[in-house]
Image 1 (tube, one colour):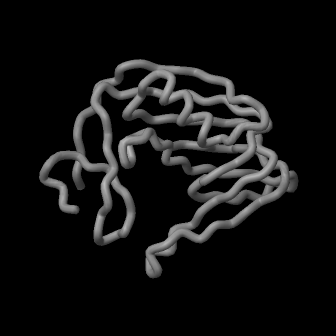
Image 2 (cartoon, one colour; image 1 turned 90 degrees about the vertical axis):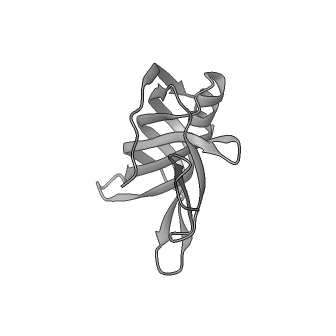
Length: 146
C-alpha cells in the first residue's frame, strides 16, 4: 500500500444545477475553487445515468445506461489531476422507484437535483497509467512504478 498524509485546505457545499451533468458539476466546482485534490460526497436524484463496470480480466470498462429517474442514495469520489485536467472519479449507488439499486463508476448522469460536499487538500494528486491494472491511478511519489 502506498499512502501519504493530506492536509485539508478548505470545504465547500454546492447545489447542482438541474439538467447539467452530475460529474461535470463536481469538476466545475473543483475548477472554480482550483481544487487539484479532494474528496467528495453527494446525494440527490438524476433523470438518467451511465454507469461503468471495470472488467478486470479484459481490462476495460463496460457501460450500462439507465434512461429512468433514479435516486442518488450514495455518491463518493475524489478529485485529482488527469492529463493536467481536474477529474472527478465518481462512484454511485442509484435507487429505482421499487428500491432496487444499481451501482458502479458513474461516468455521466443528468441532474434532477443534487447537493455535493467537497473537501480540498493542500497538495495536488495526479493520476498516471498503472501497467498491471491498465487504470489511471494516483501517483503518490516519484517511487511509484508506471
